[in-house]
Length: 180
Image (cartoon, rainbow, N blue to C red; front, side, top):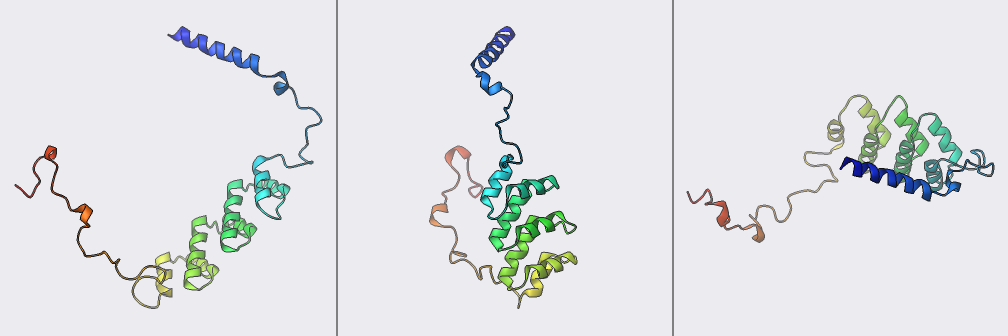
């Protein structure tokens, strides 16, 4: 059994080595573009195509400073979503504030719903207040926040729906608890 596996692996390696064209294994020629000619990092190239007004070299420079492409992509997504500057978001995320993406999103969504500035909400959050405390300050009275639905759904309190009216346990499950 072990000899069969060894034979198969050896045959597979030999087949691959014979089928690969020599050109694919050749050393790069001087005609290949250098880093100065065009963008050679695939992720930087994709992001520079996706982000208007941002060059590939700018993204590579940011990456060399320690900012990951995922951070850049998330910052750009949030900037498009909320109309912000993506570079400022990167700085706030990577800087001393160290704001998480969820905190930034929550602040902007709540700011839109409450009619206040997201920076004001983030400043209150930085003072140590929780999101619940911040929301209670902006509410006008008891109850749910304005964006939450008010009252119960129309089907509440009417009992089980018709499809949920069971006839007890199936025969194979034994007698139900109510029959005993």
